[in-house]
Amino acid sequence: MTQPATRPSVIVDCDPGHDDVFAMVVANHYAKLLGITVVHGNAPLTRTLPNALISCDVFGINAPVFAGAERPLIAPPRNAPHIHGESGLGGPELPPVTRTAEKTHAVEAIIELVRKHEGDGVWLMPLGPLTNIALALRMAPDLGKRIAGISLMGGGTLHGNRAPHAEFNIWADPEAASVVFNYGGPLKMVGLNTTHQVVITKGFVERVAALKTRKAIFAAELLDFFSTTYGEQLGVYGGPLHDPCAVFAVTHPQLFDLRPKRVDIELYGEFTRGMTAVDERPIVASKKGEPNALVAYEPKSAEIFDLIYAAVAAESAPA
Image 1: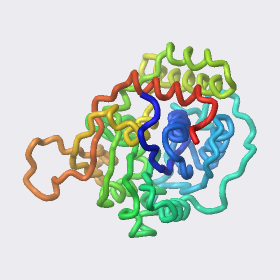
Image 2: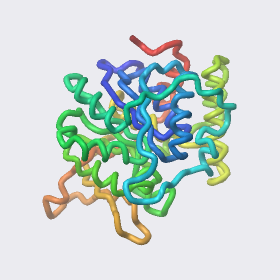
Image 3: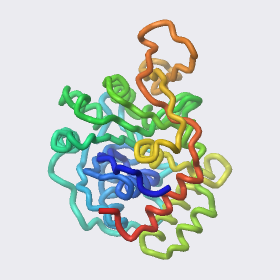
């Protein structure tokens, strides 16, 4: 399994973040990457933006990069230095930033790129807090009808990570998540129940490092740092590569069991704010229970890692 039969047009909205970098790499290799929009999340925007620019340089990604929201719609900003380091990309020595972001704000860029490429069927791929996407949907009410869909990494069907029932991306901006899950069009949710089965091994890190190119060494150092910090939290080496899975849910959907489910965002609970309430009941009693998302289950992890490896190993993205 290599390239999809048709490479979809995508906009990656991210908060780099180790796993975000690999999502950028696979989106550049297996899709038509129209742009990268950056949001607060794993680190403040002052970190995630240069991280995106540096990653584009290292991996030869030529898509334009746009700076977006610095904070959630309502909640205070929240970051994850205990996993990603203070810079958001702990591990390798980060080179200086040599390219600049576009002047257009990320939210405006999303709207403009979708309208420009509407005939191509653009997928939005948010991999961090959903602030940029929610703002774009609010600013341009027609946007939801112009896109092919949204494929996001966030939430889960079982448990959270930053709270007992809330995954970080949803927990960081639940109000934005509620806007996105209720936009009314195709939506794929790749949550912790799936991504926690796509776990980096020492063997994979060594396999990538053995390529001995600049980008492969950079990638291996990212993978090792991410796996080590997860190991410090969980007691076992190996970080889950969450974000590439949201890309593969569009480029290689056969890698997952995608099931129609009703998903609502909990906004008020003292212990459950940011929870993705996935209705797993076989029979629901009201229209409110009608599915609004395809939720990913049962990933084919070995194939996912082979595809990531191929993207890192490639000399350049397909034309």
